[in-house]
Amino acid sequence: MSYEMIALLMFATMALLLITGQRVFAAIGFVAAGAALLLYGNGAIELPYNQVFKLFNWYAMLTLPMFIYMGYILAESGIAEDLYKAMHVWFGRLPGGLAVGTILVMVIISAMNGLSVAGMAIGATIALPEMLRRGYDKVLISGVVQGGSSLGILIPPSVVLVLYGMIARQPVSKLWFAGLVPGLMMAAMFITYIVIRAKLNPKLAPPVPAEELNMTFAQKFALARAGIIPFLIFFFMTGLFVFGYTSLVESSAVGATCATLAAVVKGRFSWRLIRETSMKTLAVSCMFLWLILAALAFGAVFDGLGAVKAIENLFLGQLHLSPWAVIIMMQLSFLLLGMFLDDTAMLVIVAPLYIPLVASLDLGFDNQLIWYGVLYTITCQIAYITPPFGYNLFLMRSLAPREITLPDIYRSIWPFAAMMGLTIVLLLLFPQIALWLPEQLNVRG
Image 1 (cartoon, one colour):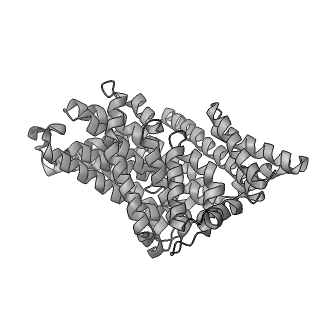
Image 2: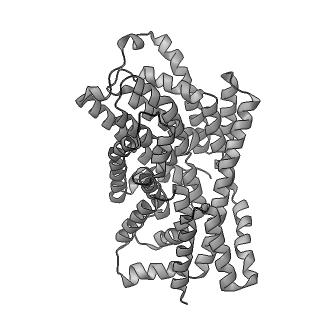
Image 3: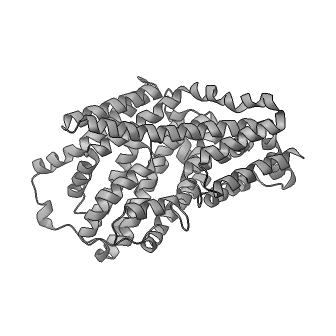
């Protein structure tokens, strides 16, 4: 059997196991261990096992539980809810002001947590009921929450970009800053879209009654203090990192410590809070660890077959595709995979194939893997929120109030998916949108 057929069989077996409902890390790890034994004999059992030591030697792995903990403790302690109330007052006079405030809250939540699930949970449980109560169109606000939550895997400290950096062996700091400008650009697009739609059709987003907003500056400032804590945590954490005072791991520890102190200052610290936050952090962190370990094991066997070179020869040698055509094909495959898998699973499944292939392409600029990390992240998030099987669609339905139905959720997401698609097109045409900031900043980690 040729190496190409063996590689195809590995992917087919993995897909079959995933269809049966097996856990992603179990399916990937089983195929890796089984292929190693069949191909190389009993001695190959150490091949996947040795990946454990490689995983534990990645110092950057320590950032994952720190950032996840930071986001959970700020959410569980009610600080995120206070932040939304402040945005309600400060942006209430804008057309669609509550929806605009929701997007801004999502940006801040992204900067606190790095996961789209956290933003989705806070938006669906806090922002959606409030906007529905004030007569906002349910289709519009459903799209706002889903689109805003997608920023969580792009704006620093993105956990997904941390995972990509470890698998692609790229500096996490550069990936973070590469994602910052596209992430803020998407947030600006979302806000512009909301304001324009609210101006054209005020019934979609009724203005907040003036009596609720007529308060002194001192009263507004008192409400705004709720938003000061997350801003201080983010800027203190990233500021030390950017100016070289802390490494990536040290910066994550600063963020986690500051989040805990914020809960203490607000009078919401308790052992129950620590216990629940720690259990959730442990569950999510372990999931990521198992996924990365399975991906490393699969990649070790896959690379040993020379399958990456075979795929590279197929695309560039036999099919004579241009480098940009190969990139577009990769992104289309992510959109297809996103109907069935989440973004992390997609990364660990295709990383052994796509990352070396991107590195081998001649795209005409440096830092291709940094740029592709941002491209991958946005493409996966589009897949994550588009019908028929986008994971976030069903998560949104489980969290949203009863009056928001699944057809409403399906209808709501298309404008935001289109804006994400526009961002991808701009990144393809102008790679420096993602690469300019990391090239200007000299950071550690």
